Length: 378
Image (cartoon, rainbow, N blue to C red; front, top):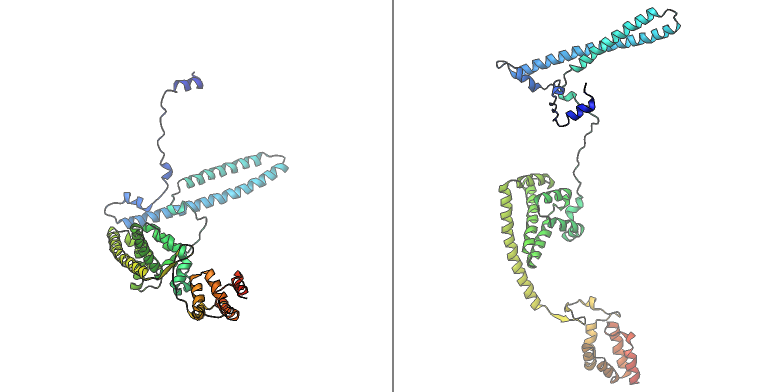
């Protein structure tokens, strides 16, 4: 006799045989297509499937009825066993009761074996192999777009959605553009096209042609969707958004979009050259001056109401009414010349002109220059 430990040592170097996969657990799964294997060529397959289905249903019905009967008989016998147990406690001679109890237990055991056999040979259809734990219907409602957005002016629209417009203009793939527009349908607006068009022109004028082409593609996508909405008689651009991107998946449509991007980019480049030339000519004709901070400023003509000083007088009219020396001192901002001109004038006349200059905003009396000039004249 070989012990277990020695047997393990002897078989340690041997390769253990692998078990074959057991497919028997799928034997009781029935699909209607499996009946075709047993169908005679001269018999219609649909008819054969229907006959086999009726046969299985009849057999299943009979097994269910038999199983129900066996289970009900078991329940009755179990109740009788409870009564026998109660009688055994009171009876003096328990032989007959024990014999009866033994027969009932044997009958229950026999019925249990039959119930087990019925369960084992039961044929399962795919729809019977699982059950519904929770059943609910979720309807995705489209994001509501504020009706007031349609009536927004361009400046208000850009101000409200500037961050989204910037983010959309930088997308590089069609899938990202599709997802972004689905999530932000308010961008399917003609003002979006206008923003992207101006952005592409601005990029080209700053020498960023590659970035310009990317923005042009984003512009064309929005414009195509809007044009397709109008041509199909739709009111909501979201209705044509998915079909449009579905068409773009074909190589032919994508190639057409790339050609349109190149063609439109050429138009943007031509317009950028014209715009740069116009800006250069405008810069030459524009009157400018260098401020005290060293920066270049443009002369802007103000209306009389805008020119009014703190006292309600027009500084231009007041400046033109001043004596020549006083006017030249103010124009050149020459403080010594201004003080000299004040000293050479009568006190009353000097006070009158300086009060008018203060009311017009040409002179700030807080500096104290006026008082110094007047006192010296006195």
